[in-house]
Image (tube, rainbow, N blue to C red):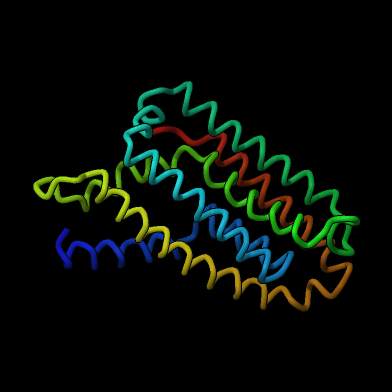
Amino acid sequence: MHVETLLAFVATALLLSFAPGPDNLFVMTQAALHGRKAGLLITLGLCTGLIVHTTVVALGVAVIFQKSQLAFNLLKYAGSAYLVYLAWQAFRARSTGGDAGSSPAAEGKALYLRGILMNITNPKVSIFFLAFLPQFVNQQAGHVSRQMFTLGGIFILSALLAFSLMSIFAATVGTRFRQSARARGIMNKAAGVVFAGLAAKLATVHRG
């Protein structure tokens, strides 16, 4: 790949990562509610999910979601159901903080897995990668799959940077709110509304 192509891709990837969307809304909500560490763990989970999508696209599996309505619907409804579950958890969460009896390691693992599930259960990400990455591939250079993995890796690093900055910002803004039980209760309800909204949006997306 030419240097100019890589630079153009990096710029585009950064713009797309900072643009408002379900993933960065998700990470900012969680960081504001649970703190900087939670936001960064979810960011790592989201970026791990992007590794899965990159692999799926590079190996050609993403075409299944583009061609099969059944496969597309199964994955998106699974994602919607998970978001509804998160909304239910947020609505019933106590305003006093973390779950009783949960160790920091267990909570960290749960947050990381939450980010992975949030990302990989959205088939639109695979379809987006399937449409986006090939635009920057040099067919004449060969090694198309290798180029796809390279571009996917650059996009993941861009997303990691963008989401980390957003989670730090959201956690800083939410510091005072987390110190108040009443404010935490309001933030939990707001997070529940966000999750429910994301679930509804995902449930109604189409392949095109």
